[in-house]
Amino acid sequence: MRFDQRHLLGIEPLRPDEITTLLDLSQRYVALNRQQQKRSTVLAGLTQINMFFENSTRTQASFELAGKRLGADVMNMAMEASSIKKGETLIDTAMTLNAMHPDLLVVRHPHSGAVDLLAQKVNCAVLNAGDGRHEHPTQALLDALTIRRAKGRIHRLNIAICGDIAHSRVARSNLLLLHKMENRIRLIGPPTLMPAGIDAFGAEVYEDMKEGLRDVDVVMMLRLQKERMDGGFIPSEREYYHRYGLDAEKLSHAKPDAIVMHPGPMNRGVEIDGTLADDINRSVIQDQVEMGVAVRMAAMDLLARNLRAQPKDVLA
Ligand code: NCD
Image (spheres, rainbow, N blue to C red):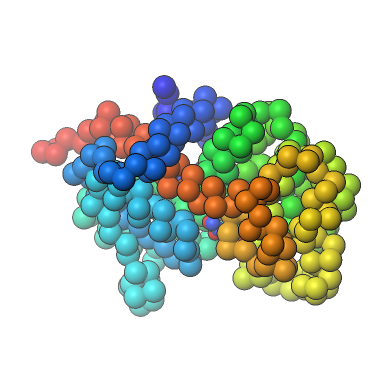
């Protein structure tokens, strides 16, 4: 089992064997999480600080639960109430926290690259919980685990990522991971929501849902990220749903056993039909949430092992 990273800043620096290591370990945490007694001491004595500069439900809750189940002391910083609001820079806040000797820092930030910058300034392991439209590595890993459990493998699958690709860190991290694991990836969405130069990633680009979904094994839907749009990217939500919203009819073009995914939060009736999202025979959206806790436990476990392997000299 090899995992040579100090931080988890993105999927980009990970090797395929490191991704497999992480998924294999996550699988063990899925089993632990299904027991009544979920407590482990893997992170006992370590301090985990969660800093979310952007709203989050699932990601923050699952990082908190993951740390607590592994026995860490977990603190959630209320960023709304923090000194950032008084004009303190991100780096000053980070340095202040660093002086309190955390071991694991979980950071979500609206600016791409902010988490990498922060990681250069602190002594602890940093986990990126989403930075702007750049990366969201634990989301791609939990998606990979969900796919691997549903399909029995995470290679040589036809996977469609649909909707607002341009503003989505989820799409970017997934694209990187699925490409490293040798899947065939299709990106489906209106040209206004397709980033320039995306073909360089080795994916096929489609404008039409029915064409793009033909014979895929996995359909990954994305939220329309209105908060990151600074203009009219779509004619109207109604028109968008008509052309790009996933419903039973559009899904019928995929393989009969294709699974439906969504990272949440969902806009029912905008990018996905509510009944389909709740259909437990097709939708694995709740599995994704369950896998999220396990993947975050595995990621923090592996980073903590690497921290222990390079102990700081306390008297230096
Ligand atoms: C995603 C995010 O924040 O990037 N949500 C999540 O982490 N589950 C996707 C989104 O906000 O649409």
